[in-house]
Image (cartoon, rainbow, N blue to C red; front, side, top):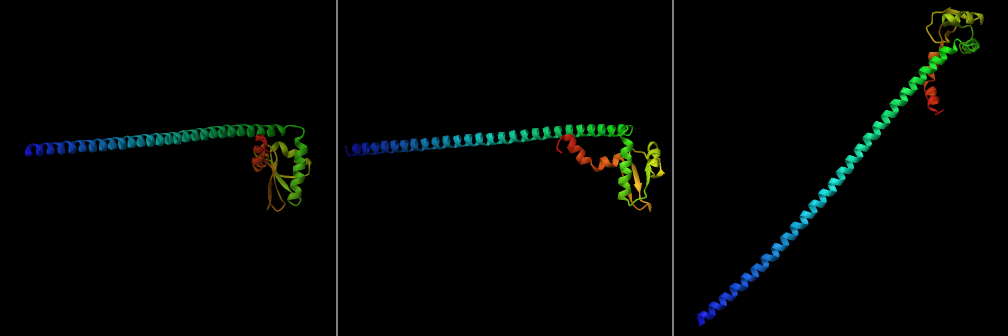
Length: 185
């Protein structure tokens, strides 16, 4: 009987130990499952955040590229418009040489050149302008200048030259002309 009591006591301890191990196992299993869920949630949240950030960066990059392309198109269109207007301005200047206002302007230009170069100037001009300049008592050294209008004047020593051709006047005032065309002046 003592042996039976001892066996019952051993069996009882074994059951309690098994029950205690099962409960410990169950608690650790629950803890591991909980940690796994937390890590899974963290990884998913991190992936979502990283994905949103990457999408936002890509969206900004695409928008920036589109804005840059739009600015380039506007710049190109403005440049073409300016070139067309400068070409039209050159056409107007070429037509101006055939107007009644051109010869008085030529006289003013000759007087200006005379003042700037110290008097007694000689000019290179277009063949069409030679007679009008001679009437103004300006020495015409050459009448073979290829220009829309105007002339090139030199002082009597030939050391200074003043370019008053329409092309040069327009080139000197290119920025001003473009600003006026764009309405910024």
